[in-house]
Length: 468
Image (cartoon, rainbow, N blue to C red; front, side):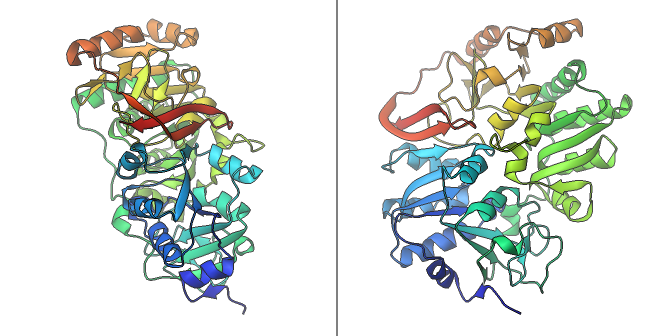
């Protein structure tokens, strides 16, 4: 049988024809346990290749060594959807000549597929592969579940290299990416640290403030008019969001409401809701914990989907456009309901949109859960430091001090007022927060552009400037 297995990453780089100025790509399903990006970039540096563009779906703390490759000119440009503060703080200080381009989880595959951001060589970490490149994230010692963010890289890159730490006999069944997309396969000792790939559990908050917000969020959904047969839902893995899912589950079971699907980065709590009959299916672009990995491996109702299928505005259809409710977080939100998840209040890069603005744009109800203050800084401000998700796509802000509804959604406000919920003006929330924290001074930003926030439709949404 023909094999695509080569002896080393170096050989794969040579065979792929990587040259100065080209683009390489990586996915983030191994999250903070990833070894592949650093290993590949170290090898590329040793080979003397420079001025590369790195298109990584997300960058975590474990990718801090990438900063060295920026300084030694191996990396000239970065495209990503999310950047952890360990990398972002130095980017914010202006170490790159070219601004980082931040896309969304839907915008990235759309731009790859259209050719706006072509990939020369995609390096895809796969927990298991056969010798011809049929591979999956569901099995193996480094199992991470769905490989949804890597599909576009595999489908559209000029060359595709699978890097795995478990080589199975041909043909691997239940593959995520098929051999027709793959040029080379490299077997390594380890593609990542399982402790960083998935957490054993993601936990519901025990903080009284978080529980208050979560219960109010569930009541907003209940009285929105959307909680009925066929209901669809996405939430994040934060403690308050998970608590909101718990309260929502109780309501759905009590009122015998059966939803159609849960979406997004899937946690064990959504798996529990599936098993309890709250949803018929789970559509999964990324597994967040071990329960989700186990579920996608065994349960046919738990379906892996690509990032294109999830949220691409360039696809013929995407799941986010069929979404009823999404619960999201915020670093800041302003009185026009614009949300910042890219920078902290001092202007340092510490995140990114991911699917935030994709789901807000697609969902019938986009809800932000956030306390009115965090670390003695008010969450509500006159103008966010960076617009990650435009206010036109945000319907409601839930805080411990009340619920603010976007004036553009008068019907929702009327429903919530009639239900007796504590509806307040967002300007009042700002005043309450500043009464507790004082009015903070806005950070003085430098003149160098360090980041461009690109809307899911390809337009420029905002610019991030250097920190002085």
